[in-house]
Length: 247
Image (cartoon, rainbow, N blue to C red; front, side, top):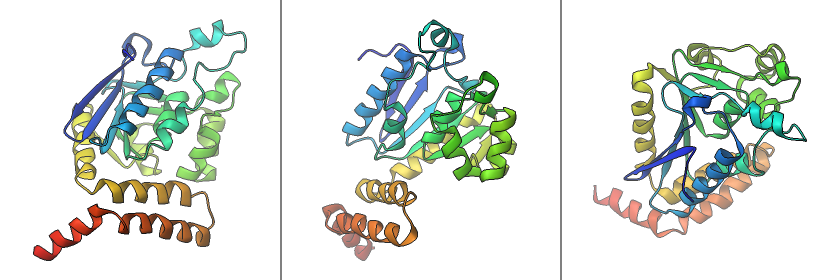
């Protein structure tokens, strides 16, 4: 697929995917949704890729759904292909959302599908579905309370207020904050540190967390043991043990 609404760049084991509709503040339309599904399938199939940075650049991550397409739709539903969020969420490789500028509604939901979020200090982040008379079904009403706690999530969702990167970091929605100039480079540095680790262990560690977080504790422990068995059976594990013994 030729990409017209995103950019794909690969360096060593890290891929940077950039939302690329600056004239629309990277608003999510049907074409971008299709391209994101395609590019994440491409990343999943490429064994050389070990970590992904998803960004809109330093000035705007994503301002939500393209309302012109929503208005033109008979159903009034957001212009999102089924399965897009799950494709990002369950990619078997770590993902980092680098949030600069506006990250609103559907944009926030995309960011929350990533494993790790970092932001610029002056980012503007929030779930504004309520102001449109909608629920954030792409993850907002489910993911946000799990990330920042029920009370804080309800305040952000019920008011539709925007918070900056500093506040997002304080409440645990993002892990780190940087200046706009530093944001993308810092995201790539973090991705490179992650990519330096063994990919098989990373794949099953991520799976154990993603699946286990939906289970009760005893079930999650049993599931993590199953994942660990896969790692122990890999040649990668045996090679790493031999390497450590030599050192």
